[in-house]
Amino acid sequence: MWNLGRKILAERSLLAIVLAGVLIVSVGMRRVDLGQNEVSYAGAEGEKAGWARCADVVITGDSRVVFGVSGNVMREHLGDLRIVNYGFYGCGYDEQYLRAIDEQFAPDSGQKMLVLGITPHSLTEKARRRNSFKVEKQRFESRTTLQANAVRHPRFFLPMKPSNFVRAILGNQKGKANVRNAKVSNQPDKGVNDGWISSVQSINPVADVDNYRFNFFNNVVTENAVEKLLVWVRKWSSSGILVFGFRPPTSEAMVALEEQLSGFDESDFVERFEAAGGSWIEMDQYKYLSFDGSHLHRDGAIAFSHDLGEKIRLEQGPPTDLARKSFLLSQ
Image 1 (cartoon, rainbow, N blue to C red):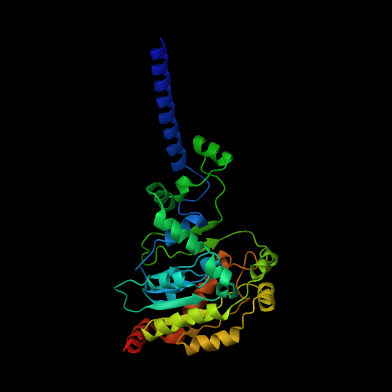
Image 2 (image 1 turned 180 degrees about the vertical axis):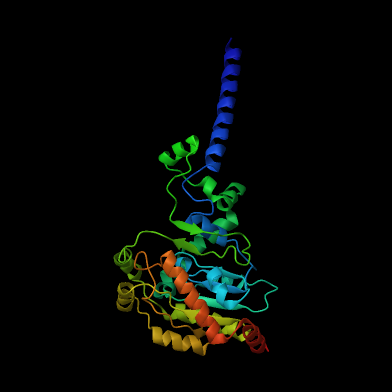
């Protein structure tokens, strides 16, 4: 009798596991938290950490670049190039990140270009030591198969709100959509996956300003950080790579805060950047819509990406001239 009871219990346990698995898969496939092409911010960064040898044009920087620059929009001005947004939250220009940037160029690239987004915080020691690039790179290199699938299929693995869980079971697909949309892949393709994350969050022009001041508490721009970056600018430009720099637009309140607390001397940096072989692109800091006073709203990012792409095109000429200049610099 005891053995029979154990057998029945085991069979019931197995049946429960099977039914739970079917329910999980069914709900995961029907989840309504995110739209069909949407992934979480963490999923986007986790996927980008695995990119390599995939681009002609690499856009770099911190979260202002992540939210602010669309490579696909820039392609409308720069021709049929593979352009990727290789920005990461809180990212600073340390040696590991600079080496990873260098590894993004495709072996068959005919014209290589770097577009460096420079914020004061990206030139501080804390940003260089601790940022999401380092976290995601380490996680990527040590992740399990399950974790890898969680990055490739973030919609399935993300937590779900109870209300949306019920909607998924009942077949109601009208759940609340996530406000951050990213299209990423392990090897970005032309015009498809560029690493940009667009945000349609509600507008609060000072939401991030007060909190941002803590980024500069015992943490200002250092000469070490500036010089380390300029060493790479010299290396890239001398090898024929076209190097552009720009300051991602924010808001008047944020720029005022950074001028007061960060120790960033933009005019001095620009002079040294251009002396190292880079070309600085002046962009209007206050023209584009920001959702929190620091990061661009999707509409602002699209407008900014058009303007940035056009300014680079006008600075260096049409795509054929870009290739010619890159070839001449490499000689």
